[in-house]
Amino acid sequence: MKRRSTFLSDFKAFVGKGNVVDLAIAVVIGGAFGKVVDAVVSLVMTSLLAPALKAANVSAISAWPAGAVLVALINFIVIAFVVFLIVRGIEAMKRGERPISAAPDPQAQLAAAATRLAEALERRQL
Image 1: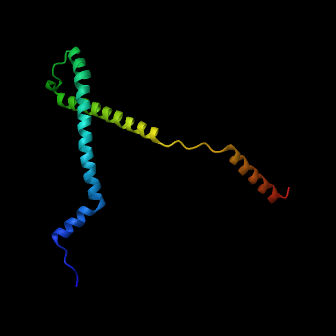
Image 2: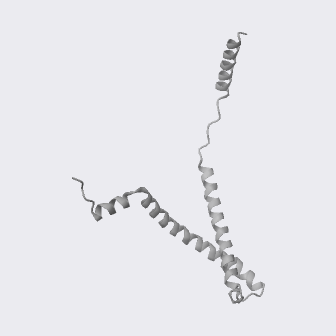
Image 3: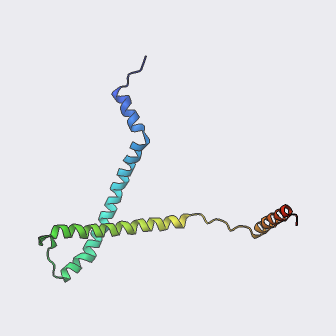
């Protein structure tokens, strides 16, 4: 007789799949990463762009006819640049963590080369 699946057992099987757990972890980490990016972007916007816009006598870009698009574009460029810097920093740290492989032993290389040479000479009967 075939066992009837229950709602709870189906839900348990669904949640137990690796993809669901991986996706949940990605969403949580993405949310935390988003907060870091927002904080850095707001720091950049307030410390760099705000004085530059004030010096250019631009009081409110959003009041321009295409101002909302321009603001969104500036935000996108700043966010993309901040994410680029963060990812580049993480990759640099990963490169620094890689174990340095030991240099090959020159004597062992020489012995292996001599063995290969001797075998090659034997094959040619020299």
